[in-house]
Image (cartoon, helix red, strand yellow):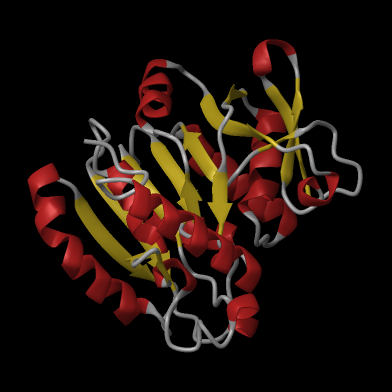
Length: 262
């Protein structure tokens, strides 16, 4: 079982903060954004490897960051590999879906995959989701509530069928079909690798992974786990500052780092 972290963006909406630092490594409450996800990943039973895909411009930054995690990774028995997609500027970026395919081509086919964007902080425990994923035969996504239509228009909104099967994901649509959204956190069975190849052959390329997930929902069984929870998306300067304020307040009130579990 592996995790794939999508970190190949250039963070143009956060410039100049991202001139010399990738978005996923910007400090939030004194820690890199990606550290919060790593806290959750190393607690997952059966996770053997983490594969992080980035670009040539920031590859060295992530390799240096990985060195700071080496002791905890060794204790957990998890390997972390940084993959360079070869691009050097935003105009040449491959897109998240092509980057995901790049990783799949470089590794042995895993029993299952957790795929996540590296610029999100998930304010919920991943362990129950991971346990459910390992038990169930189908792909899983997370659905979180959102009552603001403006926010829904900027994300992937699920179309629910019976028993919370996701029949489609409307990515960045003007008419959201529900008051739920799917953050970039996906639990995928091995069949998703071939499905991704079929998707890219059909569309050529796609940046947001939600477009691939829509394709997967229409061709294979994908179910949602609905959570009454939130996530912090580090998408622009305003959301970055808000996340920093919220987690700084949390750290001041909590005796241990926020979002981590003992």
